[in-house]
Length: 454
Image (cartoon, rainbow, N blue to C red; front, top):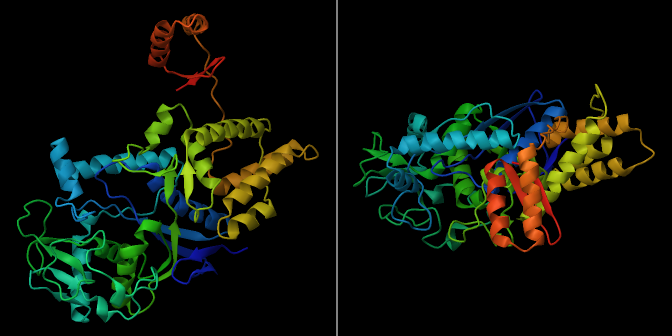
């Protein structure tokens, strides 16, 4: 079978093409000035799902994911760069901030069972690559040095601009997100910075042929994808919010340099809501992987929730669905662990579902039907589950560790139940704190208290 994915540029589902059974992937990575939230992780899971599917189909996959650790991104017209702002908040060097959150990022990937990329190039270590690409764009007539000393891409020099996002240059208005508000040196408002003159900035700047400064946002991914994937990307993955302007601008830069269509398929994951609202710091509803762990759930329960929704559909996350997924994982692992020395056995229906634009909800529906099929031998069920798990990555062969309560904890639980029965809420809260301090998660309903180990 062949994997077919929705390509944002053509607006069609297309077959993934390869060269000598090798597929080259690029996934836009995190900007490491804070922890990636679960919405970001949903996008990173998308690239992992594509990679696992291609591997099961027999392809060799090379994947590159950048680490944005240079202080160049400005959102919503904020005057100060976010990495430098976080550096001031934490009173440590900007690159120390970057390394701290980069480490957190890799920890979160492991918790979600997302396989490591082949390369994680850091923007701070690829400045020469970006400068070389900028010089080529200037030589080709696609870029120019503005009156402010910054280097800009000439958007009008690229006739195919807008094919990913549908935006036309003549319809674009000044001041769209992610661009700087002080770009007074460019010829046309839709042009964008490839290299920003340092100005009054004293940190996170580098020497260049155009004077001290720092790279623009979009040039980073063009330089890295071309360098580390030998000039061509079969599948480029990112969140839907990157479609414009980031990927639109990246495509223009890359194609202008290579002289051809550098990326075959542009694959975008949709937004994630939490309890009906977009996750944001201002709304106070940002959820991190560690929040899932602190609630007592297996992080792979979150992975299962993501897989129960199509990657191209906006989804609404809540704690109830994570709890339900956690119970499902326990049940499936219990089933798998009943069969010794089981081996994966392909289920064609599951393969077909995954290959048709990653229809993971359909694949999971098939698994649920297999689980309930009383006419199917348990060895057959487990074989199909293990096959599916090679793609879904839920670690279904993991043996659940049973941890017994100590006599002391059993006594506290009984005392707390008694306090609740007597409506002694102050004592109930005190005992709850004792239990949680010793590693239990307590969940109360109207008529009972449930617990589990953290």
